Length: 400
Image: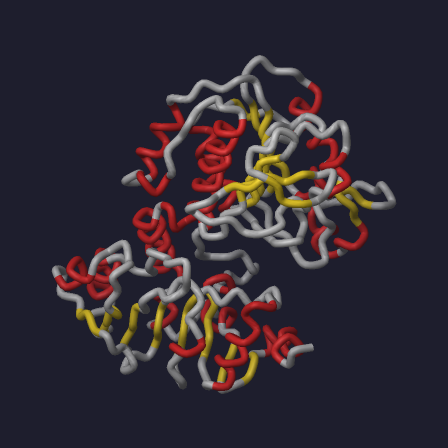
């Protein structure tokens, strides 16, 4: 079997990679018969020379490889027919901007495995950049808060050598009493929590957060039943919410009345209630100054997320009264951070962490006949057709 590591071609440039040089060495040690070829790249966080120094082949042509690994979407014109690809396609939510990509994958008879669809038997994701999205989302949100109120001035994270230097900068800050709410309990939220804990910001229960006035900064982490309630007022469990989201409405407004900062780490299904609505943001009781929307679903559950932002320009101002974008630090605006490629700011750390997960959970399936069904569950397309698990995308492919 021959693996190829793709050059990232999406713009803005993404410096991450699935396998670092060290991960490729480990791969070849574990599976001596595997061949690996790296597509030459001048933007990857690891240079071509770093791969050749450990005996890995660099080439401008990887069309002889069986399985091609990338991070972001492969441009349609660069897809090679009749190959297997593994990358984030951003199509499983029927994203309109990538319909043409999925159509081309089917036309070219490509077997697609999406990183986002690599799950265990209980449908829990096995790999992702979520932790680093959370870390960077927390950093940028705190940076935005400091700039908004002219309290402190943090440098852009891309200037740091890695996560430790970033944390060191945060630990030097002195905060006024404020309240931060984190939505979600997965890997993204875990990354946010990791940063706040390293800063020694105190975690409190939801009940305390909502009613107690503190003399120090605090945060709380909330799950779906903390910010959604059944319309009939019954109190059930998380499974009921996941199975019957239409029976729920958001009650996140109780957090908007006491929170200075909101950082999102939730997963939001298409048919779930919107979380932070424009009505909540317009309320005279709303105290929110900064929203860090790591989930970054445009015109979705977080009403103030009007567009994605970039690493170069991570913030914009949102004026609730007119539901529109204004100057970033407009005096009555909420500052929004909605960078949609956050892990790119720590490409080395993020790539190494991703590669470790990939080696543990995915690579063995290529060599053990996929005994745990990891690849079978992840495969979106096969022989020019959607697999049964992803047949729900047919109307999307057809343009309906």
